Image 1 (tube, one colour):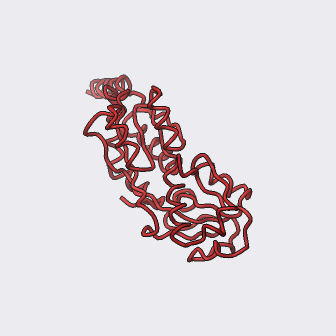
Image 2 (image 1 turned 60 degrees about the vertical axis):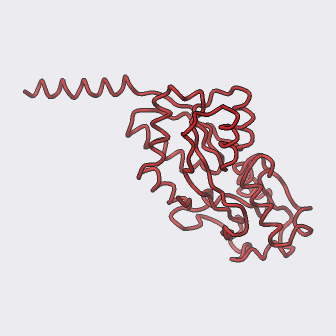
Image 3 (image 1 turned 90 degrees about the vertical axis):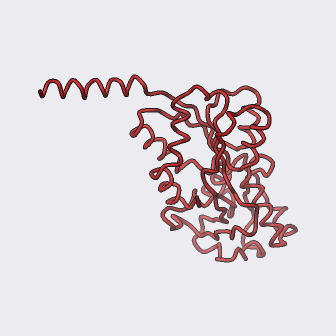
Length: 248
């Protein structure tokens, strides 16, 4: 009896391993930390492996248009997946909003950023980092906040642009820029700012950072890609997203 039970377990394990697949995922740079953890949990729970590439949503759009073999796109906006859908590069009916991001003004200096962003009106910084508004939705949102506050004349001469929100974070974390508009997920965990000082921008100051996922044509016959999109909507993934400040 024991032997039969062991054989059944071994057969199940072999079948699961044999069925395990791999999915290549283009992931918006703001979503690095939660997605790394989600990918680990996804592999443990399903046996499927997610190969992650991080970058600016605008760059991924260009790469996908040029035939990059990504199976899934996790964008930093709604517009890019919708545009790809209209251009026939996605599997229709698979697009959904997986998270809504938050923008924050951040400094490594624990005393520099106040709780209203008034630091932008002063002279206590030489450089302000933002993501390229043409490539990164978080950069476009940062420009909207600057305009909302009416500080364009003050800060635009001090702007330095990162290709993605990931590079923008690097500018500030290495203190090549005293300030930067980054994703809240890059600097917080469980509702706490992990280092430095920050102002979490009210969502009313910019277009909502709704982030859509979509199955690309390269992934239409890939069970791992389909499983990942389903997994992103499950309790374990959504709990991880909330820990990094995303609304769902």
